[in-house]
Amino acid sequence: MPSRASTGRQSAQHLDREIRPLESNVTAPPPRVSLVIAFCDESLKWLGAYILDHDVVSITIYSKCGKLVERETLDLRNESTYPPALEIISLPNVGRVDHAFAFHVSNLKLTDDLDVVHVFMKDTHMDNHHDGLDTRSLGETIHDATGPAGYACGRLPGIIVKKRVRRFGIAQKFNVGLSSAWSFWHDSHSIKQFRLSSYSSHTPRTPNDKVPFKGSVATFEQWWHVLETPIPGPIMPVCFGGFFAAKAANLRAGRAVYTKMVKALERGDNTLEGHFAERSHAAILLPAIPHHMVEAIQEKAVGRFSCVDTIGYCGALRDKPGECIIRNQTK
Image (cartoon, rainbow, N blue to C red; front, side):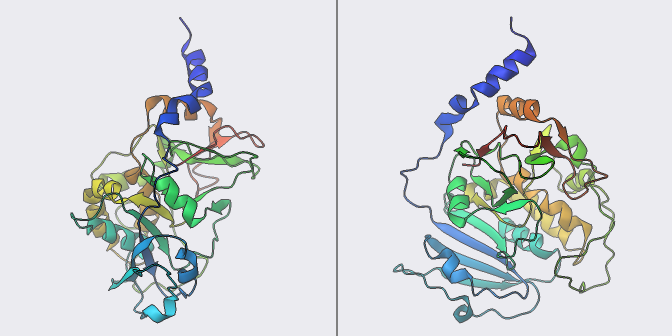
């Protein structure tokens, strides 16, 4: 009888073959898209050109900072017969972008088409200030979200590979561009310790209230208690940068959790809960992956980012620098 280790290696070697039946149908018609934008005060003039080649049927802009948004300023040059429906909703300036995202999911209509892909982004979308993250194209992100997983992360750890392998949509790329390669996948036991004492944005804004950054929820583990759902394990996906896509079916499945998230994020503007929320979206919206894939990812990981030395990417699985071991992307 083969040992557990050898069985794991065989599973990893045949990973592509095992998940091939789950690939997206590349001949399927382009999906209909609903765009969700958390807006404060950055210009959205880039939006029209950005969505031009996609079947965007609706755009919902959540205005968080009291600034007016007019359709004429969006330059929506959609050449289709039916331009996208535009809805602008004012929300209180609490919970930052994640409050807007959670509000959208928790208010999803039961009559919504479950195959429509909702793409979430913020007004600073064109400014990727996250070190080590590569921004995927809108088309690639949408296309991957149409697959069986129903979810795609729009910003992934940077990678250098000669050939891209796209599969089920969950064993997302390792980074071989940095001195310490890292992954979309995180060790649940490590990341549940994640905490922050303070935060300053790359575009500093004065909080609109005097609410303390830290409240009663001190760790990522405690955050999942607030959401009243168990933290995924032994590994979990984390998508940074406020750019992801999911089918309406996935959003509906997570709506109860997002209803609790909305309330938790109403405590104030710049709060620790917002950083917990950012690290939760992928785990809530991505279906659980098969056990053999969990084992394959764990086998290929050689370590994880410390929750002391690298607090931002706390718990991210690490790989050998210069090697691309897990190359599968969401599809």
